[in-house]
Length: 93
Image 1 (cartoon, one colour):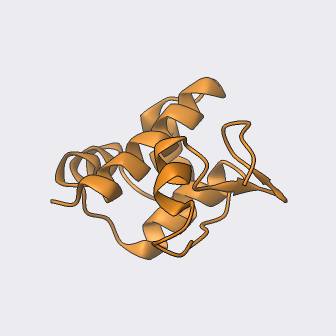
Image 2 (image 1 turned 30 degrees about the horizontal axis):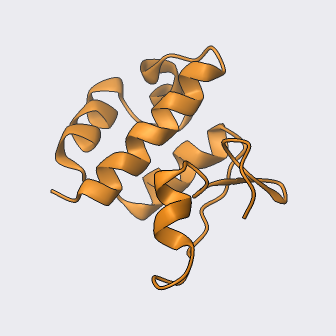
């Protein structure tokens, strides 16, 4: 199990809920089953392509940041995903 991956999935589900979408609806729109997303979240393991589809449903894109910079803080603050040129969660880069 990967705690960072689990947190990323949980963050996507939180963003979906903030936008009035259930976890099941997020999964369906991403081409996954609700059970599949639930299991991925519990395991902390998901295919990169599935993670990308979940982000895309929410209008987000994946961003990789250097480990020794603001990456860890950005992930903890919910700024790992970007909407256009802005970080999701209302924070700055």
